[in-house]
Image (cartoon, helix red, strand yellow):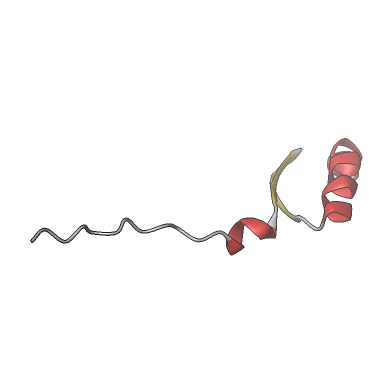
Length: 52
């Protein structure tokens, strides 16, 4: 069963590793791919305008 799972996802997993992404196995034939560069993005906060 584990062999079949690896065979199904081998090509996308190899691509993700070459791109430097993290791969999280979430179930049989299911993966979650994440580019760690998204962690570097910052949330822009709205500037509160001062009313005089």
